[in-house]
Image 1 (cartoon, helix red, strand yellow):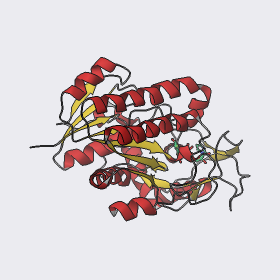
Image 2: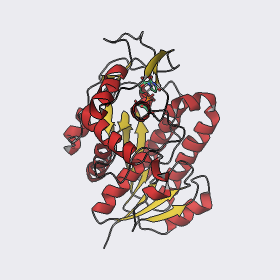
Image 3: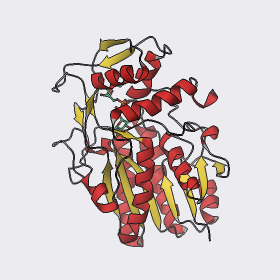
Image 4: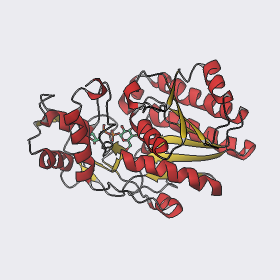
Length: 329
Ligand code: UFG
């Protein structure tokens, strides 16, 4: 019998790449998405789309009742750290409380496997770099807190009800489907890679570099960029790993790149300059965020295929050139 998977937020950036990977394996996928941040065009033919909000408990119940589900992948969330500082309670309720209710509903409907899209933001300003999974969680934002709320709910769902879960803490998701079908389309866009590409393509007047007085070699912040297709692959491997028990792990390449390095890479890949000017620091940005990614590699055999920053930028660039207005193009 064909296995069925429910993917919340499957019309969004990372979720859509997982949906494509599942569909390519011949799995039956149902996407639950309110399409507020997601895109109908990101859902491939043959994948069912249920357009509903996760806060709509009867709608969520109806979908879950239509099982059995091999697993639920939970991506649907707001994910802007800065916005969460301005609207903390929206994040704590719309991501956190709603996510906990989803976990509860999954338990009630007999879902046995759950994979959570979590974030490196749970660590806050890390005490050690690269950050291991046993570093204390000390998030500095309601966004990170909202993901921790769900991680904790999963811990208790496992302990009390036997649910198996994977919490996947992403570092900086970037890049686009190498086949060119899917890519990054956020409104507003706040992420470095697409903003630098848009500046190179003349779709934005300039990129503002948020500070160059950090304690890093060139003074700009260092991040661990990880390709969205590699993230999708890690979800599939984590799902298999659940047969041996729950897991919480980082998803990053384990190497960091500064903002200036990203700009230089965008310039090299596109052959066009990135107009950039120096601006103030963005509040809340840690200087360096790099993952210790040994756990996922050891436990699942995950080997990122697009680990090189050039590959990440190349696929993002190709998508943006072909889709200057994102999915509306
Ligand atoms: N940056 C700029 N200018 C910009 C945008 C970003 O200089 O216009 C810098 C930021 O200061 C940061 C780096 O580029 O140093 C990356 O910024 P992003 O906004 O692309 O990503 P963040 O590191 O802030 O956050 C991302 C996700 C979070 C997640 C985090 C985990 O958006 O959800 O990675 O590492 F929690």
